[in-house]
Image (tube, rainbow, N blue to C red; front, side, top):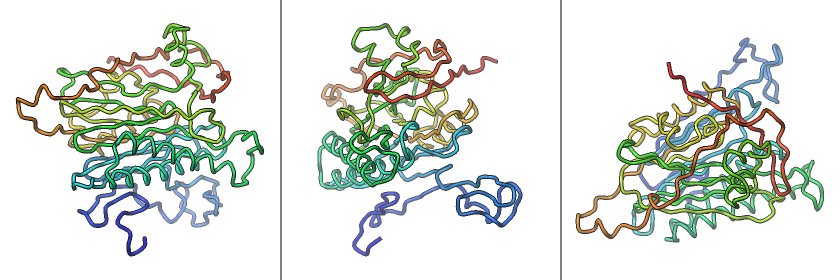
Length: 379
């Protein structure tokens, strides 16, 4: 950091504000985690037994006041291609604001881990700068997505194969979701199939909602009225994404939604490494701690643990933003803006109907292999 820096470039902490708490995994042991040998190669493998050693991105945890996140490699992937950050800042009037950004590298692309990390860095920097200058959150969100898209696109032009000149074959790519909580307003932005959910504290009095709609082949067929939901999600092309960040993305179509929560709860943003095991908001809510608003880091940890225990077939990243509505006088009750309660409820998919077939992407899609359905035990 330079002496004039007001914010940390790595985590976004306000260096002039209250201390930030950043939690993470314990430092890796000096020797091999399997045999204890001290001879570790530069590529991260033990020279004695050949075991791959833990890498910094295999498991990450970050928390500060008002937001927390956890990312884990899972059990099947050899690296973590997800990336995330959480950060806090202040609006021009001094009101606090927090952000969370989560990106999922497209495994079929080149250097997906670089794509997701690059997108997170670009988007978080753009969001913080825009909010500090008082920009409208929706405009700030769109600007951040555009900045992330440019940064990921630039990766295809750095001369690293296997990109093909003019064709960008397997150009680095990722999906994107982020959330802003500022001045009582929550703003979500996304591209692809990374998701955002609203989980209220009292799930008997208020219904959990999914706030995003996937950019996927199946969602496109359903929204166009060409197929029913069950039929679309039974198709082997169902999980092929139709929106992503990268040089070979056809037309960037960022989505945003804003709402003013009326009841306390949490906004949860995540990659498909989590939601593949509990897709519907009401199902996912059963695995969200009841004290999620006061224990966001523990909530993110428990959700990652749930996904790992359910199979850990993909990288898993979760960020949790606690939301406590500002007190309103009774006479102001009627002045509330329309909120997520006016949004259409996203219906759950039926992953258990998916055949075990390779995905054949349609034109303008990227292949995403189907994930197994997860059924919670009834014992």
